[in-house]
Length: 632
Image (tube, rainbow, N blue to C red):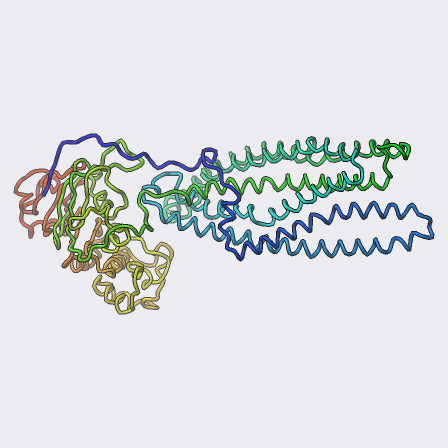
């Protein structure tokens, strides 16, 4: 049936939002990152925190012991050796504690950081696979961008639970303990120190801000450069054939050079900020020593008076406290990088796809016949919502029928197949299987009932047997079933001639097989799941005459007993179809058998060519002579 109605305006869903602007993304708390860790890793983190705290107490303890040692040196010479030995043993103990706690801290936080990276990276990849096909149409979700998120952004989140986090905890404890030592031994000097802390923090804050800006500014240029490199290497044969090496190199160099110039400018400011952070500490030393000299010279009964040992204790506290401020400030960009990367990662992890590939909801029909029907369907692609690819599209295919879709490019032929697979959902109207709206059917189950063979089949880097088994990974597949599928696809004899038979690798991008061989492996993969519906998207259009003949024999055999939808340009693949639908501007313009449509002398007749006749035998001869059914 066909019901070509009047076009109406349809409110389409909003386009997929880009997640490339991190400023527009919600913040991600440290707890949200850390809760990805298992309880065993949490135990490791706890041990690491305790070690960091112990580490942080070592240097303030050293300040106290250092003051005591100075006091020993003020004793008469005869007492110095006797008094110094216990403090020497104390220094030894502090050294041992520092060595052990540092080792444990680094070990624990290395384990937790790597574990967090592994978990987040795995979850991110799973979340990417979960997204609907329309999400990948957005340029911000290109192959290069997603590869960067998996490799760099997922790796950067370790800053929230790695060694740097342990160091920040350690330095924070050192700062607090140092201030406690300073207040405990000379409160007036400690007040002076506290007054200097904001000055010491200025450089760290500036350093931190520039580091974050430096990372953000370089991301865009590096992303563009990565995409150029990925595209050129992936298509190296075309690049070499047309001598495009220098052109791609110049384009890549232009992107990298822009990022380089920007980074150089920011590096100057970055260096100034870091130098300021380090130099401000010495100004604090000046103030401390000058003020210390003043209070040491006061009368002993003065409330501000303190001994020189205490001044050096406070001085040591300032030294270690300032080191803590500098170290914490230097690690802040790493933590910020982790937070910024976490925003990007969780923008995907928290996203609920419009079509959830992992959803367990929906019906599973008990007895699938294979009746397909489209009723008044409207559809536009997410990145081109203003253009309706299908408008008031209605069509029905009965069980066991073969339907051929023909028409000019952009007419909506491939879109029909993608709606059947639920790569996209209609914006209006209904697509149904056996009378049930496919939106109400379990997605994984629906796709398990469909086999698809495209014009350019994709084989993965693995063996021939593995590529065939990919067709039915939702169940156990025996070797006998793989061989049976290969025989049905007319490829078994060829596979047996390979060096390792079914265990022969097809190579990267299946470059070890010809076009016809890849096509037949793809057919075997589709047949292995024993689909009720078979979709053939121009499966022979890119093949030579001999390969087309062999593949067409396999396709004819595969169509037996199944509902089949075929997109083809060559008459030999569609003239004997049960029904042919001619699509024009997203609607069914003509519908009927080959003979009926030729007798109408309408659009199908004109597409077929002026010399075409309604006799299948003559049409076959024309095709063999190289005359195509569709002059597109």
